[in-house]
Length: 261
Image 1 (tube, one colour):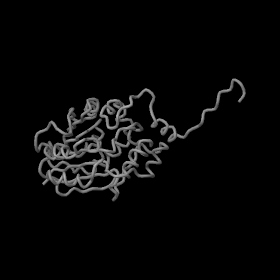
Image 2 (image 1 turned 135 degrees about the vertical axis):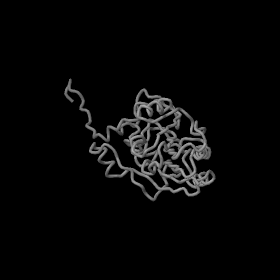
Image 3 (image 1 turned 180 degrees about the vertical axis):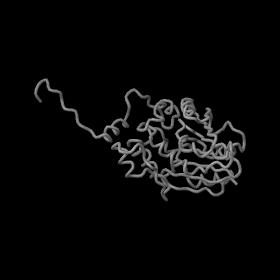
Image 4 (image 1 turned 30 degrees about the horizontal axis):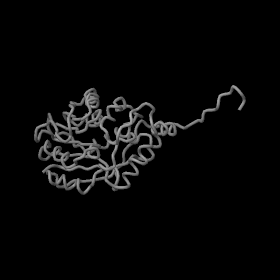
C-alpha cells in the first residue's frame, strides 16, 4: 500500500454491523448469567426500536393478543415483571387499569413514564391482595426465577376466579438452549448476551402441573417465533418491527394461558 494512504475499512452490511455489536460492548460490565442488574445496565434500551430489547416489544404485541377485553370498569391487569412497560400500547384499548410490578427500580420508573402504575416488587412475593386482578400477565419471567412453583402460586393468588393468566417463557430443551443462547445472543434483536441461564428454563409439564395445583386446570400452550420475512425486512430497515408467529412447536419460546376456576 502506498505510504500515507489509509488502509481501507471493510464495508459491512447493516446486519453484519449489528452482529459485531452483539459480540460485546467495550466498557459494559460483565455480569453473571441471569443477573437482574443487567436490566439496570440497559435501562436506556427499553423503548429503542432497534435496541437490546427490540424482540421483547414484538413478544409483548403477541402477548396482548391473549388478553381479553375488560368486562367491567376498573378491571385490573397485573403485569408481573413489567420491565419498561412495553405491554402498555398493546393493551391500552382493552379497558384495564394497567398495574405493573418489577424488581428493577429503573424498569419500574420507565414503565410509569409510559402509563403503567408500576411499583418495585418481587414476583415471588407480589405486593397485592388476594383476588385483586382480573388478568395476570407474566411474560419472559419464569425462565429467570429460581422457584417457578412459587411464581405461579403468587400469580394465581392475586388472580380473581374466572380471571386469565397469560405467560410466555422458554422451554427446558436443547432446542431452546441452542436458539435462545447459542444463536439468539448473537443475532440482532435477540436477547442481550448473558441475560438467560439455561439451567432455569421451564419444564412444560411441570408448569402445567403447577398451574393445575393453583387453580388453572386447563393450561393451553403454543409456540412463538419471529416471522422470517418480517425479520429479514426489519434487518434491512424496511419494517419498524416484526410480527411474532404462533406455532405448534413449543420446544423453544412458548406462550401459555388459562382461566382460574
